[in-house]
Length: 191
Image (tube, rainbow, N blue to C red; front, top):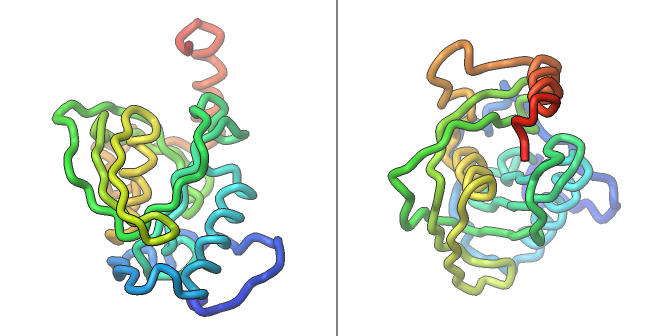
């Protein structure tokens, strides 16, 4: 699938999955933010993340090896406790600073369906990027939204959350993860 492919319908693109070579390639910088094919790709990313009940997505997940990602945290079927924020498009993002403090947390991935992995991520990140109009932005995120950024930025570097697992016990099927979540909710482990 190429970035120049036109898709005007409201049908979301399929998300490519583990095994597709583009997921292991470093994405290329976007040269012309306002190019029609770049703007169409952004629309495709926004449609795909909404329809798949994701909280973030990166261009390589739609087969386009470009440095574009979307952070779209909101409560949904996959992440019922996610904070609500407007979808944010980041073009050519660059990590400026990250907290020394890290936090272990469970992650899923639209490109690695059916599993969750426990991954350490920085608690806070500061990021420079271009917005959808090509304007420079700087943003600080923490907690779950910082985790989303780091996960999606890994896609732009050709990495998956699986590459960050420290132990085999840090990987669960989605069903096992959901069972643990349900059990812990009954114990008051969630706020």
